[in-house]
Length: 235
Image (tube, rainbow, N blue to C red; front, side, top):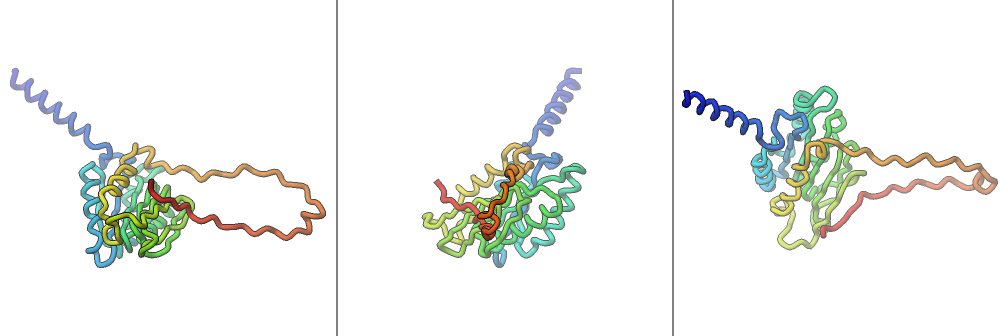
């Protein structure tokens, strides 16, 4: 009798541990699916492989691919997100890339978010082509070196971080920087609600319509001025 009781308790304990699991269990509709994209020739962006393993070690569903496959991956991400999430809210998708893979990460984020799938975060390491990120993407963080081959990303939700002059960083090492990996992981492992929900763009309150005067009626219209994406340097 004691042996039966002992094994029963062991089974219950094992079951409890299995239920505990990582914060981002694959069965959770709030769990993000992370895609990482390498750059040219699929051999110069091995930092993406390293970051993938770090994410997997934290229980996050992540995989690394060649940038040339971004269109196929986008279709796959859309289908899986709608299958794994709820009917009203597909599972979120996060995309990270280096060099040409960084360019592709923005393209992929635009396509996935346009399909109604939440893309709370896109992280780019030294993109080589000027790209424009959709306002439907929750946030784009671009680590680049403006003094080298890196380019800023445009868009209303872009944080361009210029690392020009940072010792030991180049186009071929920026994707492997351990401190940048730690920052990216910290962004992803926030609470699921923070990651999955995208803040709406602020809406300007309606302004009262001024009464026309002789001077204003004859004045030419003032052209609108585009506001560039915010750029900052790290502390």
